[in-house]
Length: 455
Ligand SMILES: C[S@@+](CC[C@H](N)C(=O)[O-])C[C@H]1O[C@@H](n2cnc3c(N)ncnc32)[C@H](O)[C@@H]1O
Image 1 (cartoon, rainbow, N blue to C red):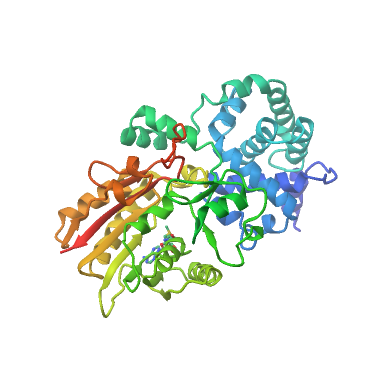
Image 2 (cartoon, rainbow, N blue to C red; image 1 turned 90 degrees about the horizontal axis):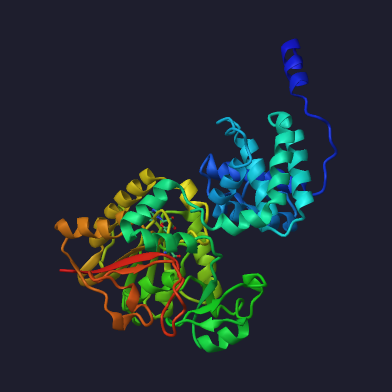
C-alpha cells in the first residue's frame, strides 16, 4: 500500500463493531434494494436461490426468506415508506446518498410492516450505517429517523394507504388508459399479495379440497396463501396440475385447440400455455429464444407428462416448412399486469422500455402471421396492462396488409370472463379486485389477448 492509499484507507476506516446476528441479512437487503431501484435489476433475478446475487445465495434459507420479504414489501410500499422517512428529515438526503436511503427504507419496512421487534430493526440499521464508511457519519440520523418512525408507527400506518405506491409516470399512464378511479383501484390491488392459482388437468373440486382452496369460474383452483412449498403439494410429482394465474390460462383457450391440431407456441417458455395446448391434445411446437428457459419448459412438461416438440429459435426470423393450423404469440412485455407478484416492475421498467417492447411485439406479430396457414388462427397475448403493448399493437397490425382479420372473442367461450371482453372483442383483464361475485373471475393478473384469422 502506498502512502496515499494508506491515508485514504485510514480516513475511511469504519468504526469496528462486532457483526451481529441478522446484520448480514440487512446488508444484503439494502444492497439488493439498490440493485432493483438504482440499477433496475429484476427482483426475481437477484433473489434466485441458485443464480441470484452471490451474497443472497450465500445466506441461509431463513435469512433468504427474510430478505425477500423485506424487499417485496419495501417495493410494494415504496412511496409510503419514502414519505414517512422524508417527514422526519430536516432536509432531503444528498442525491448520491443512495445506500443511506436504502438502509432507512429497509429499517422502516421492518418497523412498519414486518414481524421484527422495532428495537432490533433500529439497532441493526444503526450498526449497518456505522460499519459502512460511506454512512458512518449518518448513524445518528438513522437512529433518530427510525426511532421516530417506531414511536409514531400507528399514526403513520393509519394514513399510509393514502399514498400511491408507484412512480408518477406509471400512475399517469394508468389514469390515461382506465380513468382515475379505476387506476386507483388497480394501484391499490398492487399492494396486495396475489393468491396462488393452479391449472388442473381434471377434477378441480378434488384439488380445491386437497389444497384448502376454491374453484374459480374458469376452472382454475385458487389458494389465497400457501403454507407449504409448491413441490411439497399433493399431485406435484404425478404432474396433475401447474401453477398459473387464472388470467394467464385464458389466451390458450382462444386457440380452440383439439386433438391433432398443429399449434406453434412462439414464445413458449417456461411453458404454462404449451402445457395447456398439449393437454387439450394439440401437436405443439414450443419455440423460445432462451435456451435456459427452454430447459425449464422441458422439465415442466416432463413432470406434467405432456409432449411438445421443443426448439430454440428467434420468433422474428423463424421459418417453417408447413404453416401451422394455429399460432400462439405470448409475447415478451413489460409484465406490468403482474405487479402483485413482481412489485419491482414499476421501478425497473421505463416508458421507453414499454415503447421498445411494443415495437418488438408488433414485429413478432407480423412475423407470426407468416407462420399460420390460410384460415388458421393467430392469438396475440401478453401480461401488460399498458394499451401501447395491447390495443395499439393490434390496431397497427390490422392497418397493415398482413392478411389478418380480427376474430372477436365472445363471452360464451370464456366462462366467468365475459366482463373482461372489450367492445372491440379483445380480452383485457385487470388486477383490481371488486367484490367477489359468484361465477365471475376476479383479482387476476392483467392480461391482454386478441385473436385473428388468416385470410
Ligand atoms: C411472457 S414469456 C412467455 C411465457 C409462456 N408463454 C408461458 O405461458 O409460460 C415471453 C417469452 O418470450 C421469449 N422471447 C423473447 N424474445 C423472443 C424472440 N425474439 N423469439 C422467441 N422467443 C422470445 C422469452 O425468452 C420468454 O420466455
